[in-house]
Image (cartoon, rainbow, N blue to C red; front, side, top):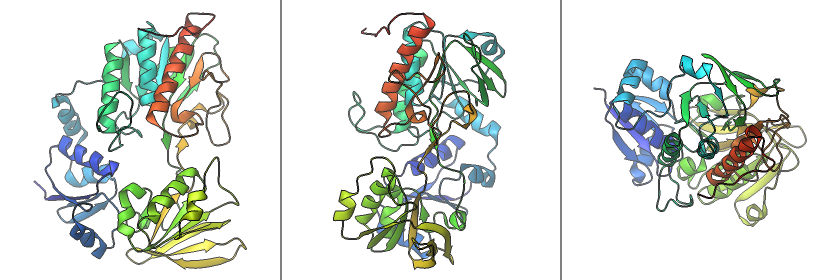
Length: 415
C-alpha cells in the first residue's frame, strides 16, 4: 500500500471530497489539518504551497482537487471504482441508461440531480407524473461538495452537502423517480408535444423538461494560473485564507462573490488589492463594508494579464486604468473573474438565454418554449442557495403538472 498524507483545512469541501474518494478506492491515509495545527501550515509554506487539499502519495504532491491524476498515480481502475461503489451499503440511486428508458415517453424530465432537479422530481412524482432525472455526475455538484450545511430548513444540526443531497435522492426515488447517470449532449424542442434530449446512449422523449443544470467555472486560463494553482493561486477563501495571514494578496473579479471573498481575506491578510476589470461591479454587489475595511483597496479598470513567480506566486503583471502594464508584488491571488457560469451551452438556441448563458424564465419558471422550465443555477437569481434551488424545483414541477395535464391552474400539494 502506498503512503498517503493529506494536508486539509477545516471547512474545505474539496478536502472532504478527496478523503471520501480515497476511502471509496480502498486506501488509508494520514490527515494533517492545517487549521488545527499551525505546524502543518509551516510544512506547506516551506514547499511553496498555499492551498488545501494537498495529497502526498509516496512523497509526490498533488495540489488541489486532482482525482484523475491521483487515480492514475495509484493505479485505480474504473472496474475497481465500480466494485467499491457496488460493495457500499448505500443503495445505488443513479443507474446506467437502459434500452427501456429510451422507449418510454416521460411526463417530466429534470436535467440535473442537484437540489433543484431533485426537489422537482419529488413534486412531479407525487403528482403521478412519470419522472426521470438525468445527471452526469451526481456527487460532484455544488451542493454535493459543500463541506457543511447548518441552515437548511427542517434539517437541524450540521450535515455535509452530500448527505443532504442523498436524502433528497432517496426521497425522490421512493416516490417513483427513475435516475440515470448520463450527459445531455443536445436538445430538440421543436415538437410542440414531445421534447427530445440527446444522450450518448440514445434519445430521451419527454412531455415536459426542467433545466436544472449546475454552474461551472469558466474555462479560459490566465498565463501562470495553472502553474501556480495551490502555490499562491486560489479560488476559495474559506479553504485558503489562513495561509495568507499577514501577507499581501490580490482578488480579481467584479461580482458580489469577489466582494464577499475580499472581506473574508481582509480578516487574515495584511493587505487586500481588489482588481475590478471594468469601471463597476456587476449586479447588486454592496461595497460599503469594503470601504470600511482598513486594509482593502479597490482598483477599477485593472486587468490581470500574467502571474509570475519561482516556486510560488511572487508578482502579477497588471494593465492599469491608463492601459500601462505594471508589476505588483503579492504573495497570492484569488480569482473570481466570471464567477460561476451556468452549464447551459448544450441548449444552444433552443430556449432564450441572456448574455451570460442564464435561461430566461417568467415567475412560474417557464422558458420561451411551452413545456420547458428552468431553475436553480440555470437561471439568474439574486443569490445562490440550496433552499432557493429546491423552491425552484417545486414551482417548476407544479407548472409542468399543469402543462402535462392541461389544467387551467397550478395545483398545490398540501399532503
